[in-house]
Amino acid sequence: MAKFARFLTEDGSPTWGAVDEIDSDGTVSGRLLRRLPAERDSGYYPALLSAFDSGGEDTAFSAEASQVLSPIGRPAMILAIGLNYQDHFDEANEARIAAGQASLTQPIEPTLFVKSPATVIGTEDSIVLPHMAPSKVDFEVELAVVIGREALNVPVATAMRYVAYCTVGHDVSARDVQLDGPSGQWVRGKSFDTFCPLGPFAVTGIETSSLDVGLRLNGESMQSSNTTHLIFDVPNLVSYLSHSTSLLPGTVIMTGTPGGVGHFMDPPLYLKPGDVTEAEIEHIGTLRNTVIADGYRGDVPPTQFSG
Image 1 (cartoon, helix red, strand yellow):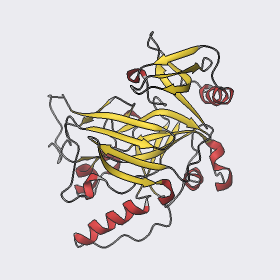
Image 2 (cartoon, one colour; image 1 turned 180 degrees about the vertical axis):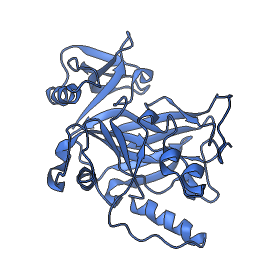
Image 3 (spheres, one colour; image 1 turned 135 degrees about the horizontal axis):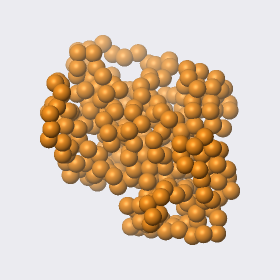
Image 4 (tube, helix red, strand yellow; image 1 turned 90 degrees about the horizontal axis):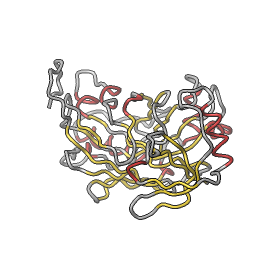
């Protein structure tokens, strides 16, 4: 297992380094990876995978927490899985039954939705409560995996060969847009800008089958689970998705969130300006974000969710 950071150098260029040490203030130090092509270059992911295998070179680096970027800039696509932890599936069912709705049947295949690539931010960046839907924004910690090689129709047994690295993901969700509209709009409710924090690090060679996963809100534990409770584990997700579409290098797969989301609390708990979320996964790190209000004050198209 190895840990890598993507960070801004003094000249403002994104650069990768192999992480050797993380100080208590979030300062990261280690050894630079060799120079890579631009992220949109077709040779980027082959070069990145090769650099990961080679490890850091002789040149040392040190980056403050504010310099650490999301380990991916603009993904090729963000594929996300709903209701994929048994504890989250159970809490959703309990809420439906309490509301007099029919219970959900245990899934036999993953529930898929997508998020816009423009949702991605990094650790220490701000989650913005959107002016079109600021009132019911929820938190969801997730294990995120990034595809490094094109994958099509891959078997479960070899699926992890196509994963470049894992990181911490946060599937921020505007629940009113997602669930309360006449037909529900999952993609829109999940795709406001800043709604997909990723980071702080990229970790290779990690065993994904038993990782502690949790989220703290203002220092208080909200979600606490383990990837053993995934209904569909990472190799099965990669294989399943690759049978629907080619998974291009740079595709992010958000593997689902455990129980404890704010929407199913009594009363519900939603994010507000000034909140601090800390999404954490064992062996990867802590993804920290502060919540702020949207500063937009212009005209707004008609919407059911204007706050």
